[in-house]
Amino acid sequence: MDISTFVAAAAHDMKNSVSVIAAYLEDALQQLAKTDDGQPSAAALSTAQALYETQRVNGNLVQLMAIFKIEEGMYPFEPAAVALDEFADELLGRVRPLVALKGLDLQCDIQADMADWIFDHDLIGSVVMQSLFNAVRYASHTVRLSMHVTERGLEIEVADDGQGFPAFMLEQGFPSRQGIDTRTGSTGLGLYFSRLAAGLHRRGERTGSTRLANGGGSGSDLGGGRFIVELP
Image (cartoon, rainbow, N blue to C red):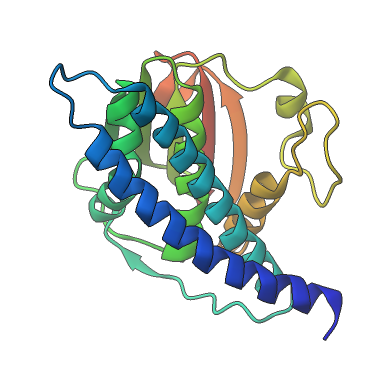
């Protein structure tokens, strides 16, 4: 067994354990959130932060395994018609407990009468889910998930009203493999995965893409960071 196969197998085992921990934390959070005055207790806030970090690690492990399978030609890439309203409800449901505890406004803006769109549900779901968790972490008051059809295809955007992405992240965009960024401690795994996942989606000469921005677009009135996925 080579090292990459060993790491993938270990990541799978860790993901299962982390998923169990996340389930226990979700249950604990529901119990701690029940206070007489309606305000979250210090224990509830600490548990919410632990849950966020656990879900973030779980998402990273899922993406790590997917990257390994994609690069080894083993990933079962299965684009299929996805009902966008149900897709949005599924994603937003995952972050609602944290949003409620932090007192944030969770918004959904989906273009009316939009037809189903063909893409790999698991891949794009993982990409958007991690972006939503990041937005919940950095938002001041509001997080918004938007879906609209443009001349380039389906545009999925996650926006918040936080301080936005640092200038160096906007400049570097979505890099290929990289080491640990000494400025942030980030490995860039999420950005690399999102670019890889979107790029698998092709229609004619068009290829899926991702980008970062601050202000403008569907989240222009929020003024914070914007993460955008475009699918042909």
